[in-house]
Image (cartoon, rainbow, N blue to C red):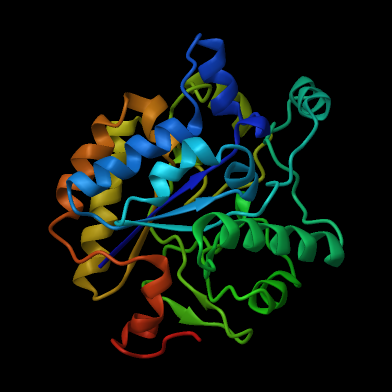
Length: 291
């Protein structure tokens, strides 16, 4: 079983991939790329869950609305603001040889996090006409308050855990159901956009993660092969393979060529939305609905 997921961010976040596209003179937005992504999923009848920032729904709804109408796609929460870092701070980090991420490493105070989740859930209800129940934090930023806050705002399914050893969704003490990303994720393993081999080698000098699954980067073609190796293994074990493939990474790497080949292979497996993982907690069909 496959739970295919992707993350979509608002243009004003100025992620490294967004900035790279602008440097190439391209006017295509991350939302435009995400629409092509879900249309490809629909072409191959592969379900997907797209975690989207609330700011995207608030500021770019006209662009995003066609995505919300694609039945095969579940729209889920990805924080409202995505913890933006000032450009000056990112430049300072890069000048010092650090890893220049587009986001902060903390939610801030309990009140800050609660307000961000409230705004995300509110704009989703307003735009989509129904509450969201699935969530992934931008950058997997997660603290001791996150689960409590998410549950209080109606979220029931979370995908913030990176763990190749967990093959099934699991019930958390908070009441949330977690389905870990248990297949090699794309962004920090993939040469794409600004992440050239030279950039990655420089990044590794200051990279705090030294063991798998965080230490290596690959071409998009090799990454696709590794994804299918893990998906095949998890499926054979009766698990749920949660795949993270960002629309903008798939686009900037090779204009969706590898992603489309993956979709052709994914179509041979049962697909599941994040909102439905409660039915297979612990590998037990019908185990819980998480509500």
